[in-house]
Length: 636
Ligand SMILES: Cc1ncc(COP(=O)(O)O)c(C=O)c1O
Image: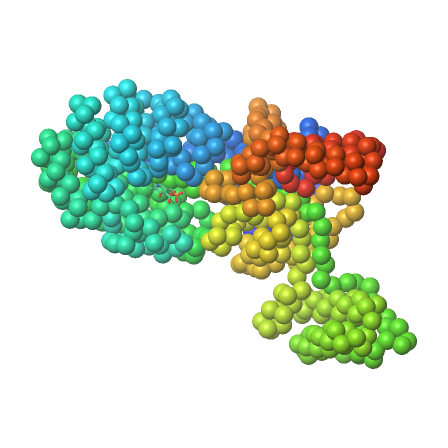
């Protein structure tokens, strides 16, 4: 099977063995338990879902991929601990904020039970959620974030109830609250302290690190905290030290040096009498979104094994040097656990092609510049592409100016646009055949990339692409046995010009156009956005009132087939209206009043009123996204 189109999207690199090419050219999922088995086709799965009435856009969660990430993380720490002769154990926690959905959190707890995997709460609501989840005995519940008295009280009493709730002190004021509540309840809490490392990291989250980071205590505050705890006979409560470098750390050197610094704090705090036994190194383990294995914002220059080995060895050496016992290692990896397990899938609704393959002839009495523009293809050679592009753009501008001044009519402008698109099409062809193109020509041609409109909202489903220029791997899900002949940017269905994607991971780097196939009439063309399990669902918003998409959880069954496990229907229009303070019932009644008035004044007849009200009512209860006509509707 020719893998070249599959590899064009670098799917063999960022897909980490999860994706493969099916015999019919479909993109398929590989069962981690049977890596040699043929991949299971995604378009085939989508057809099955469609037949059940579950349509795109949807988030596909793959249970096996979530379990695999947990296995990988815990397995890599276990191997590193073993290899280094480290005396402590690893106890990971999952930061709820990275993906708070019950279908994700509960699966992590369930599968993580074997390693006493715990949770990290970054707020009171997250703590309330975590307390209800029946964590395994011995698992940690790390409480970060700003804490009021109620948050602290919950943490102290939950510990009494047998849950290992660690209240991490993030500011001096929080310490006062903790001491006051502990006194009132006459209970001793499990405490942690968040230290501010001086080490700054590179990457998108550089600001979370270093002296100026907003969270954690300064060295002076930490020393004062110890004195205060001692004065209140609570120093024995301080069991954990926490630090967090920032998310998606691209450089392994940054991680190693930060761990080294954290160890210095740790051994010093122990020397001052704090009975610390947990060293929590926060999140930051990266995802190689581009598959390039480089220290860039969307990639990383280390492997999971390297990450774990670096941590284990650095902590081991530091403790041995200080003559102290090896602590339990804790990390709060979020991204690394969930990113791979979710795929956003949608279909292309329409394409705007910025060229045409059929020539258009000017008419006899057209302005001569139409014929001049059409003549460009006569002198188009690889050496003259820049000149041809300049000429085409010149004539187009001039003809537009003539139209504005009333010299030529609308039909001539329409013909001129078609001639221009034909010339651009030929220039693209010559450039593609020539292989290399001067950057200025490529920049100009980029202005003429196709636009493929995808049925989704960037703001709801991929907010980081909009907010922080996150690059996520994207690929068509079918026809990968056929060379893609078009280059497109993807535009969403919000009426916002920011709602587009113009950075794509390809085998030779990041490109500003995605190679795609020409659409075929009456045939769905699906696009998958991969590695979207972290932060995207959580941060999405209701821009243009596009709500949550459908979410479907699948898993491989005993025969290795993909099986539907769970479905959460996306928001209805009524639900998003309610979320922005409109009462759907009241909207319906108000609209009914308006329509009734129109009947009274004879603008519409009663039958039209019935159709209008039925359509309104049905749309109110329906999906917020573009809905394809169902088979029953299509056939009347
Ligand atoms: C305190 C804390 N822990 C853990 C994480 C998760 O980080 P990541 O998803 O990079 O593993 C974050 C996110 O930035 C965080 O703020």
